[in-house]
Image 1 (spheres, protein in one colour):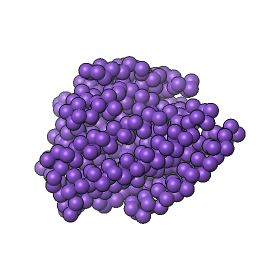
Image 2 (image 1 turned 45 degrees about the vertical axis):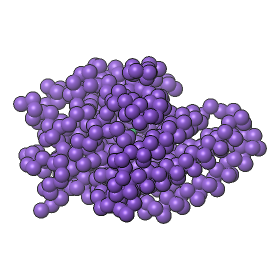
Image 3 (image 1 turned 90 degrees about the vertical axis):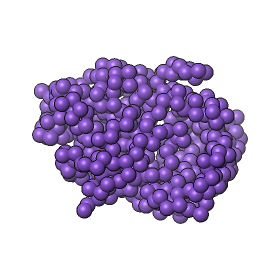
Image 4 (image 1 turned 180 degrees about the horizontal axis):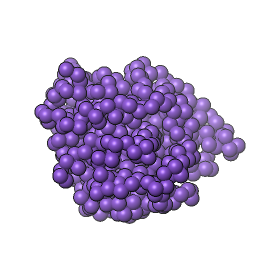
Length: 470
Ligand SMILES: [Zn+2]
């Protein structure tokens, strides 16, 4: 019995007839060891359009904040319409390879895709400005420390994924950035049956989000990583309010659900929510949304359900304490630097947004530790996940802090105090790098394997929808 045929809890007992082909497709991507930059990515899509003008239609869905055109490429014709969007978080480029492979397969008339009877609409890069700020590490993606030092993730209201309109209780958001307006246009134009926002995780295992439970899809979503040798991430979800449909498969959740969860917990909901997700927006068209989160680095602990000798409450308290220390260090460095910073860089904006949200999430963890439900043994997967979030935030946000300071030094604008703070931040950062490296034992996964899993999950989503139509 191979992994793909094993039954996992929550999986459907009977494998669908197409599963074997989907697994094979996911394992067949050509090898690659870098992520493409924005220019190369768009050039590749332009070459597809030039090669097959009979099949590919390019349209412009919008313009980035810095003035870059955002194209969408529509392939063929079909009864169903699927929208595939890469770069929704600019630090998550696995989807660029997934999108390229799907496009390549479409222009080569892969008979399997022809059977799907769908028009595929692909946005290769919805946030080119943000992607360009990550390009430095795209050529060296296997080194977690190098990645983190050159990492950029926008402030929440500037993330395409989380800046759709919201109006719920005291939460109101309508300051929609141009990139999200572009995606709104694409969603309203395509009215997708399937919408795949190509996100990815960072460390641990594979997990998914669905906008609604789709029983016949869950088994395939488990079989795909098993076939490719990737562990699931069966620790806790990224946000504690999310519903678990099956192991490592979560509901997308809504702003209203998040708001009510934090309100009931006694934490200010406005510290945790702002705009809605693109998937919540797409739901107006009856769209099924799918997100496949793949990690650059895997760790076996992420799928280990063995109970530890630490309670979940103790784990929450321990990691919240470490997070508080981290928050204080970042806050002190930032506040010391702010009076001397002359450049309002995206790194600075992101940090100024992240730190209060981080503080609120620590408060939520402390409240959750008080609940009776927290008095139970934590699993190995939960321990790994929670410990790694601390490492992740040290490296990511410490990295962005240094980039904010370096922008001043490299532009020749830095006050002597900024030079000193940068040296101090760097010495702390090196310690964090050592701690993370010791703990995570990072095992990098081949990029084609990660994109292959996303590609297979996308095909599985399309196949399930097609089966339901028949
Ligand atoms: Zn993401």
